[in-house]
Every structure is written in C-alpha cells, then in structure tokens.
Image (tube, rainbow, N blue to C red; front, side, top):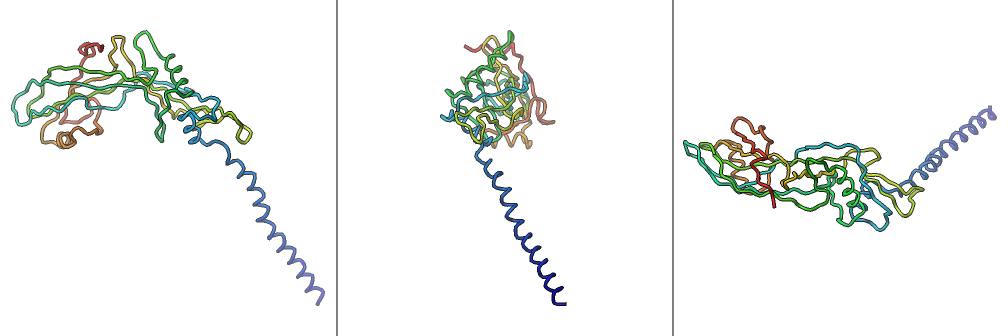
Length: 264
C-alpha cells in the first residue's frame, strides 16, 4: 500500500513541473513578436514625410483614384445684408471675396513642407491632371476671386453670397523609403499600401484665371432659426448647407460663370 501512495505522488510532481514551464514557453514566443516594434508606424511615416526627415531617401504620394469637379466646403463669402421688416425687395451692393489653394488632407491633419520630397511628388501628380478646359493649382500658391455686384434681396430677408470651389480630388497613400533599414525593410506606407484615404485637393482654375466653382446669392427669411444663427455668428466661420439644401426659409440663386469677371 505504501508503494502505491509514493507512485501517485511521483506522477503528481511531473504534472506540476509541466504546468510551471508553460508560461516560460509563452514568454519565449512573445519575444520575437516584440522585436517588430521598431518598424515605422503610419503616423511616423506621415510625420517624417511632412517634415522632410533626414532619415528619408524619398517620399511619394501614390494616387489610387481621382474625382474631378468635387465641390469643396460651402463658404459665406460676403457680408450679410439686412432687409428685415421690409415689405418689398431691395437692391443691395455686395463685395465678394474668396480664395482657393491646394490642400492635403489626412485624418490627423497634415501640412507638407514646401521644399519636401513629398511636395515635389504632389506637384508632379497635379501636372498630369491639367486639361485643355481648365488648369489646376499644382503648387500651394493661392488664387483669389474678388468682385463687386448689385443684387436683389427679398422682402423681410437677409442676403449674402455663398461659394463652393470645384476641385480635383486625388486620393491615395504615402510611400516612404528610408536610408537605413528598419527590421529588414526600407519601404513603409501610410496608412497602408493601396489605401485611398490620403486626399490631395487641386482647385480647378478656368482659363480666364477665375477659380472654378459654384457662386450663389442666398436669401434667408428674417426671424427664422436659420437667419438668427447666421446673424448671431457675426463673421465667424460656421457650417452652411449647400446650394438648394437650406430648407423652406432659404432661397438660393446661382450666378452664371459668365457673370464672374476674369481675375487679373
């Protein structure tokens, strides 16, 4: 009986030893995985490309898809004229002013240095999208639109001008090539190879030098929530609905491109 008891005790010790080794084996597997942390992350690739890091051999914007005539944000581009309390229309003078420029958009915000390798890549891609009908702003220079005109503001309404620029939206990803290999490789991507989440907006410029886009006069009934929100905002920027999307209290009248003078 005593031998049987010792045998059981011996087998039990073997089991305990096996269980004790299991966490050690798991830790050994985890070590190689942790060594991969040295690779450049998408956010690091973005930062290095934006700052033209000395560690980079090159950085390119790789286009995946594009869309012409993509409308930009809806912007109020004139002062608000008040015709509240009036039972008739009024002829009002407006000064319209806005500008367009090439922009690069990432989820976390992004500005590429003008002398960076990436800026050169973005410029070269932009050149390929120029057409016989219009030019696009391939670099980061600003093109302005300014005009003065007289228009009719409806009875008991406020009036102002709205603008939405037409842009060529080219989307793709960043490809960075480093001077020194990291974890055995020199090329990394942001956010990933083949993605179309980095957007470069190239504003379209008509042959007469005028930024291409939609310009319209907006009338808003006084005393309505829409009018009160605009008046109370003063000159601060705020989100505005697009053309024809303001609701029953808003009337939009588009201005023909032929009525917009060429810009010098």
